[in-house]
Amino acid sequence: MLSYRHAFHAGNHADVLKHFIEVQLLRYLAQKDKPFWYIDTHAGAGCYELDSGYATKNAEYEGGIARLWERDDLPASLLEYVSLVKRFNTDAQLRLYPGSPLIALKLLRDQDRMRLLELHPTDSEILRANFVGHDKQVFVLPIDGFAGLKSLLPPPPRRALMLIDPSYEDKQDYHRVVTSLIDSLKRFASGVYAVWYPLLQRADAYQLPEKLKQLPVKSWLHVSLSVHAPDDDGFGMHGSGMFILNPPWVLHGELQEVMPYLAKVLGQGSEGGFVLEFEENGAA
Image (cartoon, rainbow, N blue to C red):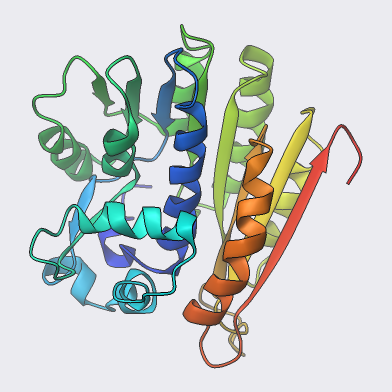
């Protein structure tokens, strides 16, 4: 399915959750001198204009990054993410929002490498243009993210973060996430896998994290953020979640501090809420 364009949703509450966690995971991998890879299965266009084009249709960023932009009470780890986004907006006005690839580029070191997969032909070309001059470090591959991930594992340094965030417009994406992870863990069991998914009033969305809990890993972390109650008609996304396989042990503590804050600031009225679960070696 090639209709989905992330530009419609850039900077919304789901991006805040996803990219805040991405920053924490990359910071953790960079603590050791040994190089690592960052693999993004559905990389999008890389950067999005918020004051023109698709992003202005629903202005979803106003309920996401815009609510954090000028706050002076951000928890330290959340401040790091917001400060990184501000580096793309030199006049202090919120006009651009970096996608996960450009966020990762700011955090990678010279020895690290990035592999970006994007099937949509228009977004793939824009993505490639956004990384001109980084050919030594970054490869942009215009292929299906699930198939591409299979071809890239295991990465040569045996250290990597894999971000898996399809649009789920095609309901088969839920199944493909699970089967892709089963295969990926056979190829590269020690990798850090971060899966994004939407909170929707449909069985597939509810069942996905439960299926991921059954995968053969030493530890997992599940976090979700809801910004309002599900709509009466059952349509629309009321939040999103991240499921991390082999998470760094420090991430749970950081989320214990940040998630109440995000639920309060990004929640609509008093309807914001979150779920945070962690299991290691089979013991919660």
